[in-house]
Length: 397
Image (cartoon, rainbow, N blue to C red; front, side, top):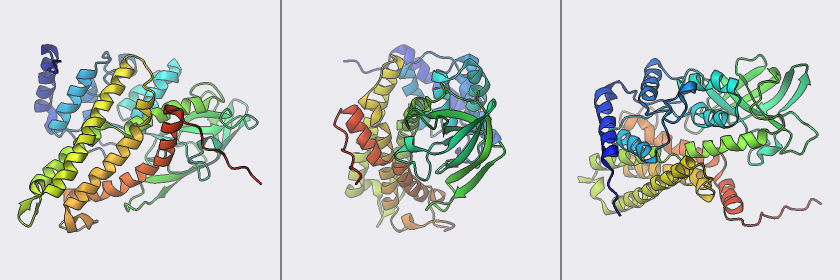
């Protein structure tokens, strides 16, 4: 078996390296969760123009328009990680809404929303979870009543990431009150500046308002603002959830984090000895490194299935559970490796990496719950992937 890259792919790797050598100094330090600044937007457009972001999205919608190529995608990820340069923006709009719209949106919706979303000019948030409808999302109660050509929406969403910064929302709303709960939902898109929307930030244990609760009071939305068919929002929502799990379980993100930890363990010392030379820490690192590598090869399997337009089945279902747990364990290793410095938070002059490891450790713990809890993910894997029987429902007295 020859695992070497052909001359064609080695030439492509050289092209990526030359791009990074020429442009890496203009790359932003990070993207954060706020509205992207001018340098981030410029970087995103530069990446799209060269095919390093939005690579396979058609040109008519603002992408690069390349044919799917698993090896080229892998080379791009490897070279950007090795150069410690951020790849394209990943967000609810770009990573979740755009592929959903490509699959199920109208031509008018694709033309209107995809390009500005890819360029970071429209920021989206996701209106799914509600205070009483988290794990059982189909029981959501935010409802829409008809008024001529419009829906009038009333209700509440919670755990809405970036709602404070967003321009638009893709939102699940019950439009058919008499239909079974999975069949009476529509997938609506509308502006966050629409009258009647109130956003209240929720401060998490990171000390920052990572999420929000959103209230809708007589919010008027045109009936044309539906993705997919009316009452078929559950079907559309599951397509978005598929892409959300892929975003949360991104192997490139885990690979970049692993590289950061390796650098940290080469620099930090314990009793005069580098942490990378400490057998206990090195053993933990190698175990996690093997899992990250497995995750990256699993990502290639998913890319292959996508390129062949095949359903990856069980392979797709494990991504979110695997990715979120590995990312949290990587952050935990960094915290432990830092010793007493690992418990610092805030404005201490002894912080390493501006406290990013402490923030990641706490935020990633939340992500094991968010986007479908680990327990829900395991149920999905067992029931849909392994065809195991559903847990019996308790009989109400």
